[in-house]
Length: 308
Image 1 (cartoon, rainbow, N blue to C red):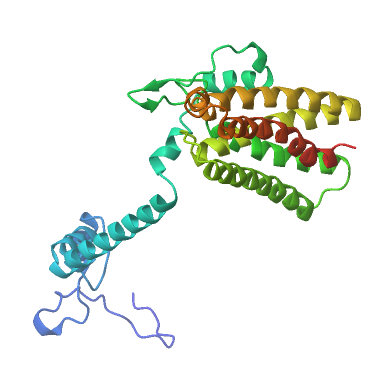
Image 2: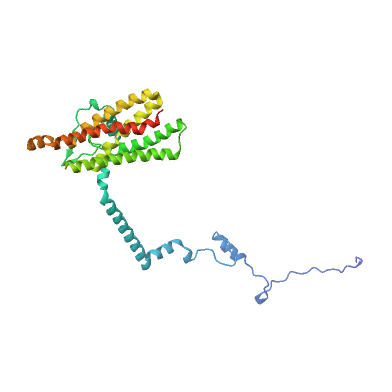
């Protein structure tokens, strides 16, 4: 039955024609390329990202760097400059001090430190004060408790500065300037003491195996007594301070005399036999005693202002 036409044209069913071929293709089918890229784990329309190029590969760049003669020459030149600078620094340091000798004074262990602290605080019970030698060289501090070291004086100096800051803070007198003055004063005193000892030994032509490091070590042991004195003053007041000052001063004087006796006075008897009543042996004895007596004065000077 024919339907009436109300302004619409009847449409015919169009048959699907074959896809255009050749040059008449309007859109390129990229499904196969996309599937190929996705199979490699990348999707990059328009350019290939399947594999990085040679100039983007780090290993190839590093290999080229090491195979480049100019780069190798630059590396060798830089290494030679670094070695020359290191040798110059070591040479300048060796002019003033021996690094190997400095290492000797820090060759300590826990056992040595504990024993040395006991000797410094209770030297009256120690019997053997002789420094031991091995093939004409003194044994290290960890092997001989009588050998001087720089570890205890260094740690004691740092502890004294920290304790001084705490004491000033308790008394509400702390300031960086006062703490810096306290540290510099303690350092200057020990430098003056060592210089005076060196000058005295030089003027009196005293032949001994005392080195500058030995004198610094013996002068620096006073910081242990200073720490003990300040602690007693903070805990027990002025009475505890003076009792601790007396104990630490006597102990340090006894320790200095017994230790320097083995260093300064060994040739006293030979000089007395060869020169009769020479003044040199007496002056050597005076140096030893004066060094010991000077220690309580420095301890009091550096600790009295910390306890009130």
